[in-house]
Length: 557
Image (cartoon, rainbow, N blue to C red; front, side, top):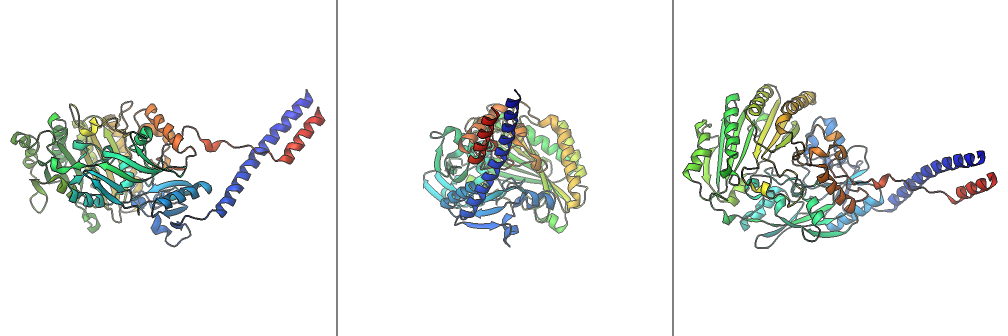
């Protein structure tokens, strides 16, 4: 018995040594491969390159404190890909040399999750040069992922075509059509991703696939709404776009008011009441926001104003009736908007012209920021409106700080908006949404960061009962990722922030496990595989050690 105990003890020690030795052998093997594998032909920028700081810069370079943004935006390598061959070779290089991969198109991910955190062996694959655009005939167009929203609109306009997209000019469409692609056309036509017929993708195995709902239904569903950058590198999208000439009754209205507590309460109350009417479900989208005039904070003017921008499309109601106008637009005039030169108009315009005009620079200059968002399955009540007004009253008193507090009306009553009706087209998780709220705070100095965080966390905690959709829908989208929790985000545990149920999330994980089993594409916002295949160590026992072990066993017996 004692002999068998000694044998067991020796084999346990040997096994432990074998695991460690196996791991170090694997590491040595990777180091050798890395030395032997050349970088792709694409332009590669390392941390030692003098252009590194410029290359890693993106919108989130102003997120939180300087230290926080530096931590979030620290890829080991940045590789600019000129074409799909560069993408394939970069993926091959990353796998051979044990890099994780993040993907950047326009670099507008507000929490910096299209980059790499400091200390991780991770390369950022940049696709901003993939700027192809092809009109395939009729309403069918193919769009390269390196184009920005504004560039796409400029190419669609002469064709009298439109695609639902956001309002920030410099957003790259690569991630936009995976995360939300919501905007003024959302109520009438759904999300931009809902119009995607197909896309081309380079998966972790280096293969290029053309994906449609018919050829690869689960991958198609996962890519469109599941989580940007999780599944591979999208090269281009093909859309069946909106033929704008079919909607000749569109009207754009814009009213601007001085910010006061009372103005906020009465105007937002009307916005929500109007949006809840069944007759507006697909015809009237409103962006309500409180912010200074663009660029004024750079000049030291932090005066806040209330804006209401309203798009009427006539999808259901056709030509706007006098009764409709009296009920939904006239109240803005009754509230007393500011006179010219402030915006104060309501005019009929071609829908294609409206989509092009509704673009904003939304650049924050030298100001830093935090943002959080909430998506709600109902319309906010008077208590929520009053609570929000009190919060804004306090914020705008703080020097060298300003808010951009935004309400967007995406859902509708009755059968719902088109965004609601398109449920099941893809994995976009907010199909029950009625209202989306983006809450931005911009500040001048790092020393203000904690105060800003406190404003946001207090507001979220105090209003949670109004927006928490537990067991019904997700609370947030990848459109406006919470910057405060970005550093600690772990989707394996925090899935309920972005997905309506565990079953919903695990369905996405199954796709991830099939197309990227080694978790090559990995950031804080990518869907994790169901099982971590990288954690299993392969036990390698060298021949000499095995011979000694067997000899010892024979001697003991």
